[in-house]
Image 1 (cartoon, rainbow, N blue to C red):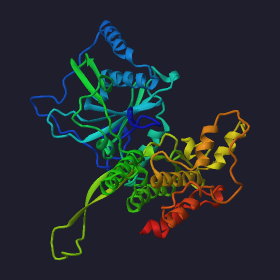
Image 2: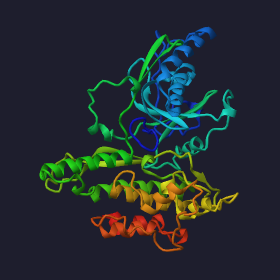
Image 3: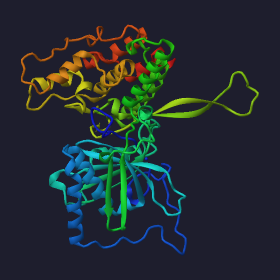
Length: 458
């Protein structure tokens, strides 16, 4: 999701129904804009902009973009400018910052722009690029991701651990998806919040329809498991070095298994609901697609049971997001996949079909593939951001290579990860890891079995 943060893609943070015609369930705690008072409108009428004015603006934009050579960066900057200038629905929001971007779209954070200041609920807006053949066309079929998240907004399918969506629309260049802005800024410990933004971290442009100048910052924060793991490791290393001056940072303890369990259990529960209730395979479980937020929750105080006030403690909440690779099957059938969203999380049965170069790769059980990817997620939670078993890293590196030395997986049994697992990882975690990453999908643990494991219930 993030332009400065994530080595894999530039990142996300994330909402419920704003427009009555969006198709989202109104029962899903819809945002509502207060009615305008009789003597003023909530939004000023946009101006009509001449073609010559737009041409001059585009010329100025091209000068501003001249310093950028990365294709994704350029595409994201152009998309945000175009969206603000041309999408009438986006007038309902004020864009605050760019959360991240990749090859398929850009995610911005904002809030409702009502003049009354009564509605300031933050939202994330995902701008999804249309394919070249659809640019300039309206009323195109919505992407699969938007179709599914609209389904999940229905009370019959909704789940606390799945990202909540509010609205969706399209213009001639983009699809738009408005979701909750979820997650804590876990990388804030690594940045000086008072430091001025570098010029490359700012997008400044003029909107002639509103006669306003917009300054949008590229956020240095990230709310996903990848960032949370970095923050945990940083905290552990700093605490370890304070207690043991001169010690090597590598000797710092692993992340607290209780925190790992809390994040992992909620992610598994969300995917389990997606499988069981929506009959849908996610298709791209990875660190970047699980958002983490620190919350304060009430609990009983065992030392003061007679107190009427609750005792508060910090906890971690989770949202599984990004359904761009999800596949939903008809009732009575299981969803199948011919590929997985991320190389390092791809199970052996899909690695093999790719390596054999079949014209039509064999379909694999989508539920079992998600279980495998969740096992890889647990490995990263226990060992550090971006980590994966060495055999999967080797397979990802070899993918697309013509080398004859392709990675070979054992025919059955657990993935060979014994040499990769830190000896400090609790044995019960190793048991779960091995069960979730069995080579043969029919031998792989189900999510029911994972959730019932004593360590998960501890």
